[in-house]
Length: 150
Image (cartoon, rainbow, N blue to C red; front, side, top):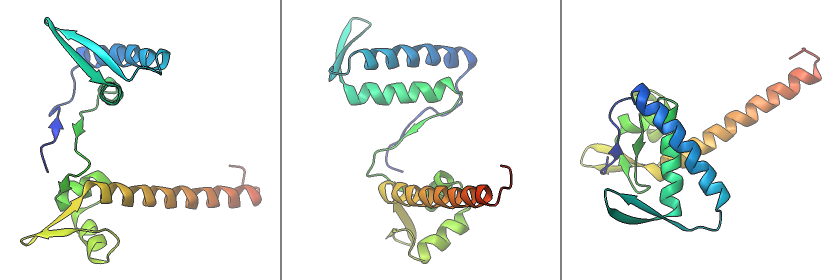
């Protein structure tokens, strides 16, 4: 994986609480100032100017930490191993390899190893999720039409 930024362990309870408060405050600031495209941050006497996109990413990161989750940030152009891709899709590595060999997901080879671009993987995941939602909606509609009571 190409240089992910990572919080390698789950946040402790104090960090979870701090992340919850910070996430809420940053959410309010972003909501109250939608026209702001950057923010001035001061830390230990150093002034920084951050773009809004970085603030939104920080808010999302804090929201995940507030839920007790560890976080990894990957660049969109990252290439993943088959195991990393399988983990992101929550499937086994052999199942992922089968998807690759069937042509359902694009990959490249680096020597004998397969690599999957994060962008392609996320596009596949989005398509798969949309198909699942459509199937679930069809089942729900059918159950309601048959008066199954749920």
